[in-house]
Image (cartoon, rainbow, N blue to C red; front, side, top):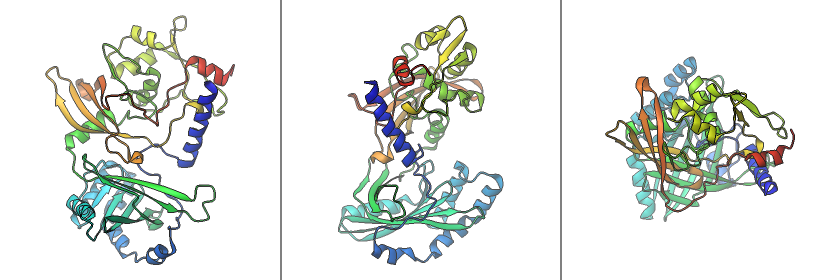
Length: 409
């Protein structure tokens, strides 16, 4: 059993090395890709760059200000860029879907044309941390063709065309949650000998606006923990019964939030070596207790406590506990202010690489405290009702599995 787990995790580790990155935003491209066909290359490889240069000119003052203050890629900067493009007639959104799309009615009209098998064309600008993507969409007889160009600013502030690909949409959907989702495959050039020749690209863009209070609550309460390497929002628990909540994973996620610095208890650089720390009880309990109303007695029953050392035994996640890099992200879509002062958040898990805008839903209850602090009160998975597999998530090794994996190291 342990050998099967190690084999799977080697595969996951290889996927991490190939794909890189763990966010809903696609990784930035550093080399020019070759588009999928000679016809497309003739049409778009030497395309007129006037439109891209026009976009760059519209955004130039925001870019220069952000570059001077080192805020390029921040939510505020990306939001200003999206708004500016909207004011100038563009359909625009940010790559993380954290800012309302401008001119969404154009996207809805295009989707209607696809459904009616009418001819139509449009462009969508997606602001990224380092530049922007431009999606040129055309539809005929119900099919959709996509040309995606990626522009990136260099160190001198000059806009560079880093990538252009063309492909038909193998999957196209406008979801009930207000997302446009599409995917397709294109062929990479011979320079990409280390990767598969046929590359698939997923895109999911929020079209309908979202209540700003929901966005603010998501940024404050949910996104800082998220769905990566922890199960705070992936299982049912409450203050009366913490269930399968993994307090070690929570310690990893909450430590930077409490101390405003990276977690110092890290794995060994040698993937074959296991590391064991002893964390003073005050440190461990303070991190967890800042965001959960849980006593030391409960924590000591849920973790390995060493009474003689007044410390918790701690094994950091290692190579054999790595997760898949394509992870869903949470989106608060509604909230209720309760009579006892708590807030119930209704949350959808948006999974771009799965082409779904609601992989699962959960409600998380928050207890606001003084001076802007808060505690997590409970979490409940609402849909689906039956058991389901969260494909990217990997549990920590048990003590037995850890010892079988690392031996006496």
